[in-house]
Every structure is written in C-alpha cells, then in structure tokens.
Image (cartoon, rainbow, N blue to C red; front, side):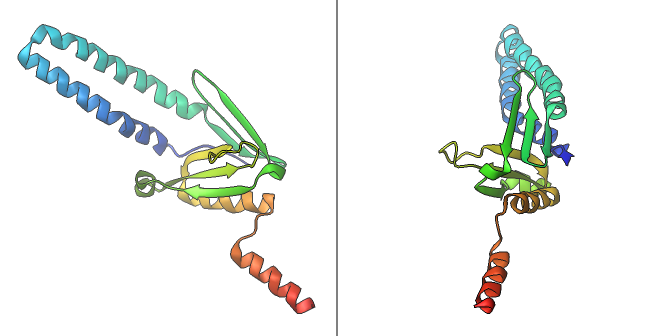
Length: 165
C-alpha cells in the first residue's frame, strides 16, 4: 500500500514561511521610505527566499513516498538530503495519531510509529501531513499488522477468555 501526504502540505509550508516573508517585506518597505538604496539588500534576500521556497516546496512534496509493506513500514523523503526509513512491524511498540491546530483546520494528521530501539520520545517513523481519514485508516491498519489491540478489542478477548474458564 503506497501513499503520499496531502497536497495541502505545500500550503502549510508556505504558511510556515509567511512570518519571515512578512517581516522581510516590512523591513524592505521601511527602508524604502528611510533609505532607498539600503532597501535593495532585504529586497534581494526576500526575492531569494521566495524563489528558493517556490522551487523547494514542490520538489520536497514530490520526493515523499510512504508505504506499508508486508513486513515493514517505509518512508522516503528529501530534496538535498534524502532520508529513507524502514521499521519492521515486529519492532513497533506504539502507533499514535496526532494533529496540531493548523492540521485540524486543514483536515490533516501525522501517524507516528514508535519503537523501543531509539530510547527517545521521538517516533522512529512518521507519516506526516496525511489526510485525517487516511491517517485513521493507517493507524488502524498499522495496529492490526503489529498486533496492538484497542481497549474494546482487548475487552472482547478478555470476556471470551473468562467465559471459557
């Protein structure tokens, strides 16, 4: 099962860059009024940032590949520095879904895959900026493949075991 993040990822990255762009634009406008020749430097920096982002954001989005294979979860991404991660299901200890406020507004979520191997609170692998509905399905599918039971599933099994006794 191969999939990609939502195309809304591009919009989010532009929103992340917006404060820096606005600050540089404000400095440029201020310098145009106060010292017009000095405004050229922040204007060049602003233009360079916008051009680099206009090139990098789509390339970064196109570089992202996620998949759930028979025996492992996989992600690959990166424009300049490529990252490729494989996490075997037998090493997975937790699968979490989380959303920030902006992700909630845009209907996105991250599915984080944790293993005890790293010894940190960071996920070993993250399927980031996927559509929320897909994230729910991914979380459920990963938990099924790993063998992590929900509370309801655990309760049903416990009740069946008690009935047998």
